[in-house]
Image (cartoon, rainbow, N blue to C red; front, side):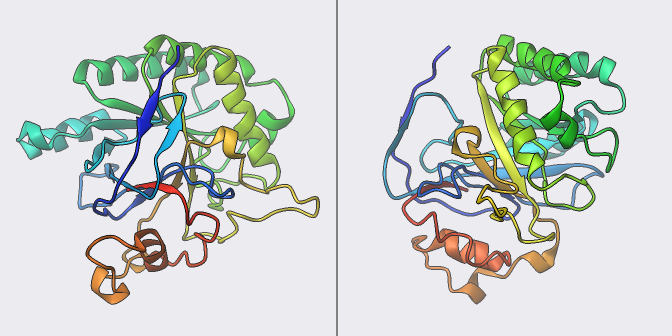
Length: 296
């Protein structure tokens, strides 16, 4: 299946908790997504996306860029909380367009992963929303297996099974692999993490899941080494432009933000990316991205 998108994006507004866009280490950042935390039921988070760009970019598949001047509004990760949130909104025009779930490979119950993914995708399709699958590479909290995925075939079958389910969904699906990769609570391994990320994506694609839209998600409250490279010049965290469709930031604390007034953000959005990231304490990260396409 081949998707085609031709979209010259322009400037729109900003949310607050950040999600993503690709090619941060190259001269082009294809997308940039800002997500925002609100006072919500336990375990529920929201994200929004809109668009900002300086030049049209053509891609050969749908990477779920929001239409010019619009934002994605989403909720996750528990169905009961999402349903409660939607009920509280009351107005269908405010309902989220994206719904997510947090999973793991292999997780604590690998035997049920395929059914959980299938049931979730059916729920989201019936609701008419865009699915967002987050996969930790772990056995429970902090028991990382990125090294196992990178070096062995132990979990290949499980990842391939997920790939077939996503393929059969036959519509674009956000897939966030090893999210918050630099957070010490995850225990991921520098150097091996990007290999595991690439292998995860390759296995999905080999099963025909070319409808995946990948997210590489950074946690700025942890070490600021997202662009670190080893002695051999290879990135310690970044999987590569061919594997990353969106770059992500998970921001949870008020200390990560500065008011718009205090950073002097212009009303027309000029310098928007630099100002937002500086406000988030992530100064200097846009040096490679100044001619890019962004989505907030």
